[in-house]
Image (tube, rainbow, N blue to C red; front, side):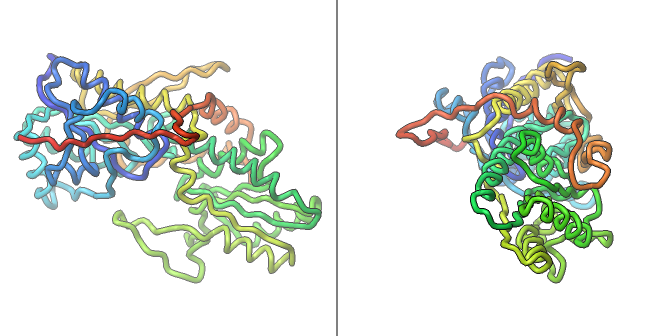
Length: 413
């Protein structure tokens, strides 16, 4: 297929991560090199920025600031949680997108995000094909949840896993200062997939981690939790538990939902949180010991100060490859990672059809969870350990990180 001349649009969507801006840098810097790409735009707050005709001319940015994006956390262009309706139900947004695309001659569209973002990408791609507007659409993966279908792992996961493992090791030492008994419950993000909570097993692998780990892949029982906790407490006098915020019982109720109704976000997902304090109080009532409930919360998403260099480099590569494939004629795909066989870690990219990716979640294999359902096997350690390797070092000024400062010059037509 011949090279298509026109402008490109890039957007960020969903929850922020330590490396989503690294992918943005990969897309933007690679697109600026391509002769066939006549302009490079960055959407303000994802798809909403396109709909509202609010996007930035990335050619106006200093190259130094674009380089700093690689080690700047969160979404430098602004993110969004906006779900496009099916075009069969309501074409309003799609007609507006087509209007904007035609006005600015946008022939390349890159969207960076997780499951819902890939759904948006897929819908835009299919609509443009339906109306006969040639626009090459590529999804750039991003999610600390690590639950995108078809890819070995997702940009953002390695850095979040490194933060979780590191913080867990630090909590481990803090919880052993005094000669009194204590139960510490760590609550980690993860709705339906337990990849983040499982990362605490890396701390246990180093001898400084949880005694018990509970993932949403298996039904959660408070009775079993108390039984497991009591057993460890009687042996050691101290217990550290890592639990996913998304753990549910046999009836499908979240731990945080027991006794209360949860608010919903714009996608209809329950707003979770509070599992650590609930379980800590349950343990206190059962064992009569000191307890601590610790919620890592948002801190695990954008902890660039302990970012994985492997993660940063791969995130940048994903953005670069999305542009290269699109220029070569590919469309309607997401860039994915493929791990080479063998003991030495090596990662390359491949393409996955957006239809296969959209709204499909990848969970932890049952065989990677121990028989008792309260820990991980060596298979998981072998999988996750390579992803946290290398130290990403943000530029420092006066001892503090120097993050990117974009001009954000609005595009005009």
